[in-house]
Length: 278
Ligand SMILES: NC(=O)c1ccc[n+]([C@@H]2O[C@H](COP(=O)([O-])OP(=O)(O)OC[C@H]3O[C@@H](n4cnc5c(N)ncnc54)[C@H](OP(=O)(O)O)[C@@H]3O)[C@@H](O)[C@H]2O)c1
Image 1: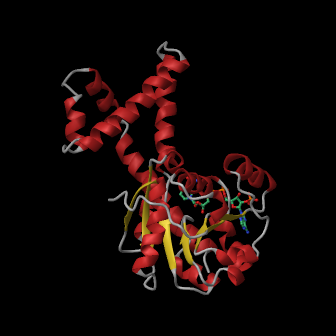
Image 2: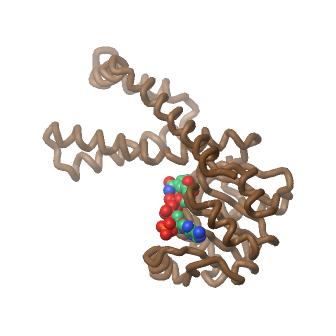
């Protein structure tokens, strides 16, 4: 796991798709000192272009054009459903570039076919990238050079931690864990907040306690050499309050259901590749 390299790239970078994930990465690049003039964005949706202008001072183009040709790296941040169309519209202008996809499910074989190049890195970031706390897994196609890897890492490192996986199929598991993962945390935050309100706390109190507990427990796990079972046992004395809660969750098989949910996410990632791939 690494946060290096910390310096941003110097080369012009293009984004195809200017939504949530593109904005998270663009925000990271600008925070690290890349000038806005070095970033091109293709984004057909008027409102998204207006957001990019007000948030970052970047005037996005409504469609792919010759401006893309100066980019040394093209980041693909479109939905899996629109990747093929976007790729076919842009390919005439991007032959010289390294390509970095953040799209869920879409396999690099499909991307290579649509773009007519082998220089592709597939990746799976997550939305804490918005606050520089993301985690991204990356996979390089065989033609990706060491210099290409450094360029991809320079971009992704501005959004948080990253590591490389050896097999492309592992990215579907990464998607299920960390790509979709922030939503699971928000789901539990909703449940803890609702429970707090049911027990008489105000919404503000319940939410503050829930968020601080997630953040604090995650920080503790990060800092500790002990596995989560041990950390959990330390807050669970027999016959105590945590014991009552964990026993109720075990009776309801919450852990098994949660694991099943992640398998569903991974299956959907694989399906997206079949459904919207080449
Ligand atoms: N959000 C996450 O948590 C997350 C995490 C990891 C990976 N990802 C991946 O990141 C990718 C983007 O997700 P997102 O959440 O950023 O989606 P998003 O906010 O909907 O952004 C995608 C943008 O691409 C635009 N677009 C559509 N067709 C285009 C084209 N032909 N050329 C250029 N732009 C086009 C869309 O415009 P329209 O609205 O007009 O279609 C939209 O604004 C997805 O593949 C997703 O799997 C997302």
